[in-house]
Length: 367
Ligand SMILES: NC(=O)c1ccc[n+]([C@@H]2O[C@H](COP(=O)([O-])OP(=O)(O)OC[C@H]3O[C@@H](n4cnc5c(N)ncnc54)[C@H](OP(=O)(O)O)[C@@H]3O)[C@@H](O)[C@H]2O)c1
Image (tube, rainbow, N blue to C red; front, side, top):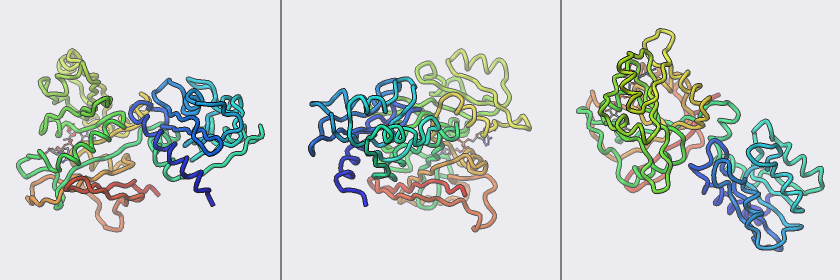
């Protein structure tokens, strides 16, 4: 049974870890708390990419000698040289007596070796305290480090009768302010936002992060024939916010005009040469250190990504409104699944009230 005191300090370490949201990608968010004689004497978190790890920040912030203290870390301490020296060295140098970790690090360079090194040096080690929460906080990192591909979150806002826009195409706004502010929180955490050209033509979106101190994600558009207008907001702001357009056929003059405006044009045709190859897009993004993608497209791109098994998490914002219309668009289109028994299922489900709306989210079960 896990000690209640361990749980309390690990909860504090988790609170610290999430302060790194949006600043550490593609590294994990990690928090650390140093405790001596029943008091916290040092706290730290991984603040930004390339900066000190959580453990070293906690040591730096210690208010007294930490010899014989316990350290609580949400993720197993690293034991390899990366951008910074191994944290296991720092723990041994500071003569820490007990190390409590939330979860092991699946990074093949660590994967249990961090704790092994500490144990063999005589440090008491405990792992698995608030493990589920610690794993959940870094689902993006764990996915990226083990697959080399970005974690893909599909988000949409729909009415209670399953429409993402009215039959006229009007979609502003499906949900209320609280739910829309929540979307910006997600944009802050993830590295890129992806839409199909249909959404750009219908809504002329900005796809930026409108939160103070938030970092704008890279904006991605799948646009097979480069239909994107040069006067749309994405193109007009491409010199300030990275904007990548994936295409299948790139007309030289259109490509030049977009590149002149600051857009990066990336041809990735499918086998038929007519549409963007979405699996290749995901592989390409992994190679560019993009660890996570928020899909905010319409039903066409959503349906295709789901069909290809490229979605990891779904966030459905549901507004208690009914608009009807046989022609009104739904969140997932394409041919669809023929039998209920074959439906894609979500697990790790959560339901959150956001003002007058509801957010249902979960991970796509992939077994
Ligand atoms: N409420 C919401 O959450 C929400 C969010 C976004 C959009 N919307 C609404 O959704 C509507 C737009 O829906 P949409 O389905 O047209 O937009 P979409 O899914 O964003 O874009 C669809 C387009 O993506 C392009 N595409 C490129 N590669 C593709 C591939 N491999 N597979 C499939 N498509 C590919 C296709 O055009 P090409 O073949 O020319 O490349 C396709 O027509 C608008 O009314 C908008 O307001 C609502």
